[in-house]
Image (cartoon, rainbow, N blue to C red; front, side):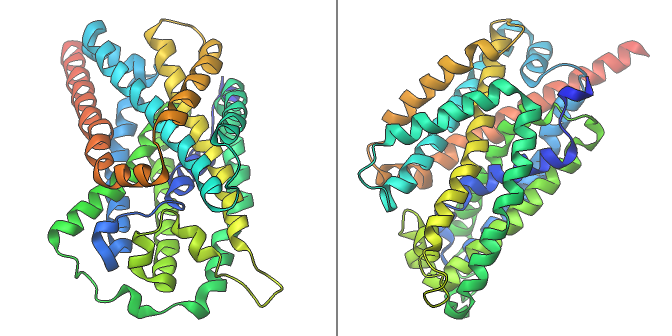
Length: 364
């Protein structure tokens, strides 16, 4: 059985890529102005707390997946409703990530390439990976982290001569309201989205180490994101960072050493693309596990391809432009996502906690 399980390092790498894939590309917590990096750190801390709740839910029922636990705790009718809501979030998040993956290169360098080419290429790879199962997804995540981890470090080092510390001054000057909005925004994206990875994390060999591996992934991914975001603001200032669809591209284009090392933005596109590959695969896996549980299917493999193609169609039609995508992400998404990342998981957590206590009292 352990041959079908993932280890602690693979769990951490999946979470790291989940955070950094889209977190590197899009502007985060723009409501906080110069304090963007602080609200990212705050969002990371909050997500470590929520990770404890996510881990608790699936650790209390051996050999039962997340969706099955919900059916056991809430019964068939209510459990089905909750599962449908989670499945929708998995589909929607996968489509959003797919759109982000396609829009980034087509808006910056490959302007004449149709979005659907990127969508289909990435989804075909993701379908193949999901059909291979959790072990292959975990090992792929480790390889991608190993290959891409030097890129942000190297890019930041090249940008040091262009940094101005005054761009992050004054500290805590954005006001409480903007700070809270920025924290909510950065918590729901990208940290809270790691909730979807629970379908893979529950496949860990030793469930006692589930939370530890999850938290380590959030910590490494979060600190890396804070470091890169601080560097971006130090180089271009918070105004350019907040008003650019893809600030990482603008900043990376300034990283160079004479004519010997330049065009780092191309390397950045490649790195974020392979990272998005894991995030899309995890979202697809989560969705297919949910649907297969809902339909009482023994294996999820049979529905991976049609679900993947459905998500491509949704992703292609979801937004008319990058402007609408970023605007929705800043103004609406935090209030939409918190329902699936906090409120519903808390309800499930309370249901599991009460159910376990009742069983414990009956046993005594």
